[in-house]
Image (cartoon, rainbow, N blue to C red; front, side):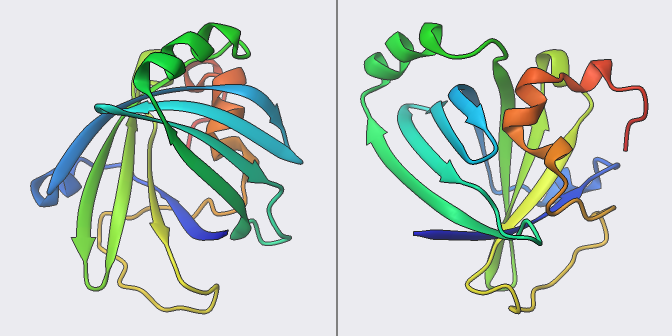
Length: 159
């Protein structure tokens, strides 16, 4: 149950012409310490409880456990979460043998757009479309758990 992913900023909307699927996501954290995060997420018509461990030194790999739960239970858990609701639309774009997940944040995080790609190993190669900007893999500022506590619209330096 290892998650291996790379993250990139996006500073253009050119990617939107390639989007195959979009899903609204609302999520919050029952616990957001770096050693373990416990997330409640409503993604479209489904809901999930996710536990993530601390990332390795590069920030590329970490433990992840996820279980689907009824949406009604997720709605009951959201008020118990730490302050800081994440609202975003996740766009999916298949490129080569991978799918990029582009999170377009809304609410207090409006203006932030981050692309993620999941890999089978840290050494795996992948196609990088022209709309990818700066890589932010391992930069905790771009973890959703950080953004929930420190909204993007309060950052002094953006991107």
